[in-house]
Image (cartoon, rainbow, N blue to C red; front, side, top):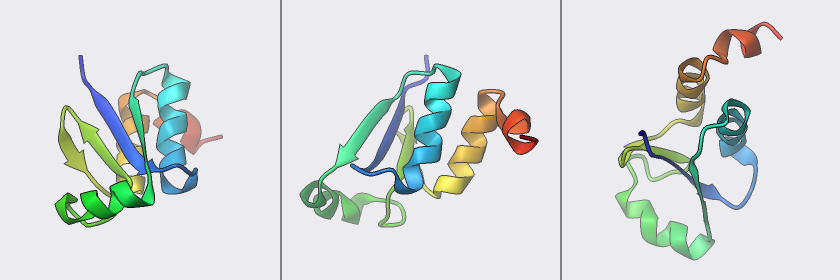
Amino acid sequence: MVHYKLTYFNARGLAEISRQLFHLAGVEFEDHRLTEEEFAALKPNLPTGQVPILYIDNVPFSQSTAFARYLARKFGEYEQILFE
């Protein structure tokens, strides 16, 4: 089974579309909400130095719009969302 971990601040912002897609599809994921201190420690190790980051089986992906589109397609929601 695929393990998803979405890392972002404790806010809606750029990660909210992906969170909603996980819930809409009924797919379990780890919703890791960072504090400012945690982000400062994690930032040097991030691919782009920014969040959100989506880890798929511990492989990090950045760019929230790109991975939201990936998730929508993977979960079969892309065309439905596109035309609503």
